[in-house]
Image (tube, rainbow, N blue to C red):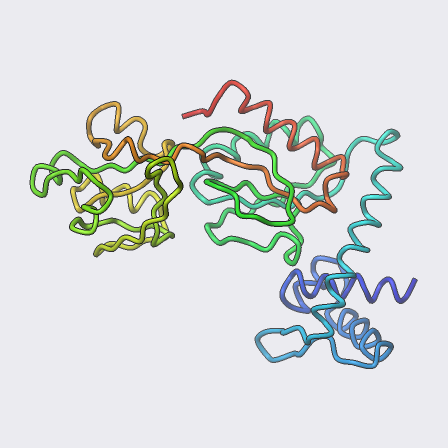
Length: 294
């Protein structure tokens, strides 16, 4: 049991990023966590974590050990929940992440109803445009937008999502509208978190690197710049649908719009049997079943 406590402490330090945060997560002192990890390193005969005053870094052995230990820990948690799920009301912590604006508008408002339905659950919602490592950082679920990269994660489609290339009438009056993808090189392209934009070209997916004098990691900031006539933006439908309808923004290169995008529920394979995760995924899918709410 003492060895298991040490493994749990080690995994918590890696996921939380520090000994003090791991101690807070597990409800013990930082010195307790430090002792447990030291015991583990002594038992294995090799350092697992290199400590500095401001950060931690895994050794090569620590990387390998973490990959195995987090699977063991998740398997243990999953086994406990599967045994008790028919006998008890769902309980435990759900840690999820989502892009900031999408999460604020469309995910966070749905969660209070879910929690009233299952009051013993604890929700830990992280809204960030940073692409988190679900396994290393201990997340149960990510809500990801766009197209999925190949990975070992499991995915479930939540709804459609469309990217629109658009600009204000004022900008187009001054600089004209592009008629081909190559003409974008002559326009001021307002960049968000990606320096490449996604299109469809002759039936094939094409990523195009763009440039301009406006960069921001905030979608609303890019939208504000487009509305002010600073340049051309590529933004998802939930930002621009009302403005396209009103004519405040005009769509461009519609024949090149990439049409195979979506919003996805993404989770590690080791989490798929957690009853609380399935409940949340089913709930979110049901809430979006009548179509995107924008």
